[in-house]
Length: 216
Ligand SMILES: O=C(O)CCC(=O)C(=O)O
Ligand SMILES: [Fe+2]
Image (cartoon, rainbow, N blue to C red; front, side):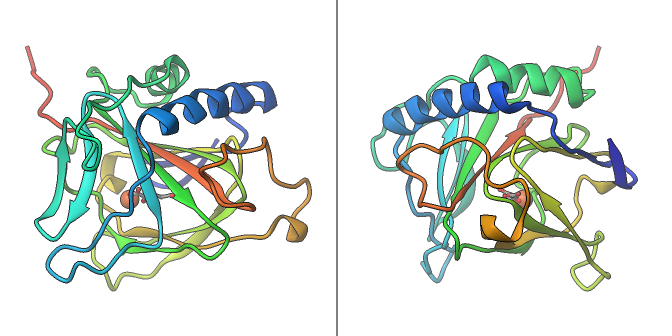
């Protein structure tokens, strides 16, 4: 494990090849039950380039009305599928949090998809970390400080990597500059991703505690 900044902990190769393949199979079923949707920007309605789904009791959505968590898929109206046991295990293993995660956002990246610099701040509880798991093509992940204009660095997130965004880094600005094509890397790729993910693409899961942790 590598502490990139206080509370920002990279676990390269956290999931081995077998665990990645098993998680991809779980995600294929989740994406059939809760098909990827294209979120749009608040106010402008401009579409994101990343497509999304969720699992767990709550899911993150965005449209003209704003960013929010909700219990149902924005297009099917159905509840989100349950979080796979493997992602719950990763949370218990890495999050150092007394409460369960409530949302697992599933981001689908194609080779040209980016995600602009942002903070994850739609949750009520910031004492819990955000736990990220990556599958498929490697991403160039950018992270900075608590102000948008703070200096930034980047790290490659490869298939099987976990990243804990917590503690003093919980509200850092971060984003995905680009998805690296497999031929630039050795070894390439990771497991074959579900059909809903574009060829040469990437899946990223972020587990989040949304509501306040009840303290004794
Ligand atoms: O794909 C990633 O590595 C980051 C995703 C992210 O920042 C988010 O979904 O809020
Ligand atoms: Fe984020």
